[in-house]
Image 1 (cartoon, rainbow, N blue to C red):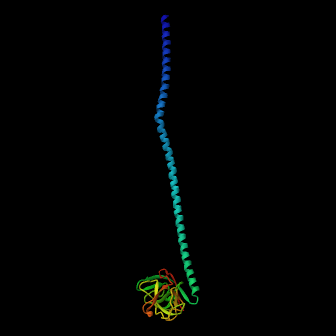
Image 2 (cartoon, rainbow, N blue to C red):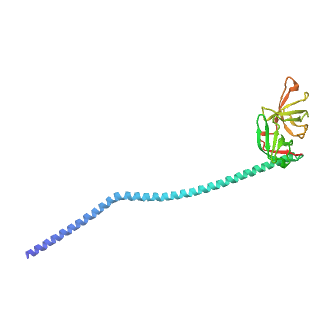
Length: 271
């Protein structure tokens, strides 16, 4: 009977101890889990945040690269449009130049409507100390012959000295081998103007009559004497009168009306 009671008490004690151990173990496991969880959070969260940041950056880079491709395509399109605009601009410039050339031809023809003329472009020039000639793009096929007078809008250019089927060589009035019988428009006095070695923009006027009153600014034009140049074509303007000890040797410097360095368009008088 006693043993039975003792065994029952021992069983109860053991049961209580087991329950206490279970409770302690249960509490201990919960605390440990919580503690481990905290440790994991300390170490794992920064890594997780890092991966999240990296993911976001990579996603942003994808957008960046997509934007770069878009910008590249837009840039190529702009380059294409710019090239097309430049081409259009060049075409407009060509049309403008052609219109200006045609206008020069029309103006020249209106100015010299009393003459039968053939328009021409200067395609080559030889302006040196010893000669001054130009090549124009018309020739015998266009009715051009030697000794025909060549003029520009400003005035006299020279005369044809040789001809091919489609070109002509013109000796200009600033060539040292050219002498043009002229007259001073204000006094009608006859003089001779000739090219010089010193300056390709001026002429030397000689054979000035001793009784002629020559003044700076007087206009010089062709006299019509000599058989080549028609009368009344403007040559230039007297810049300076140089007096010498002998009045028969005095001379004048005449600035040409035509700028031969910029001469592009001319007319050949065919009649």
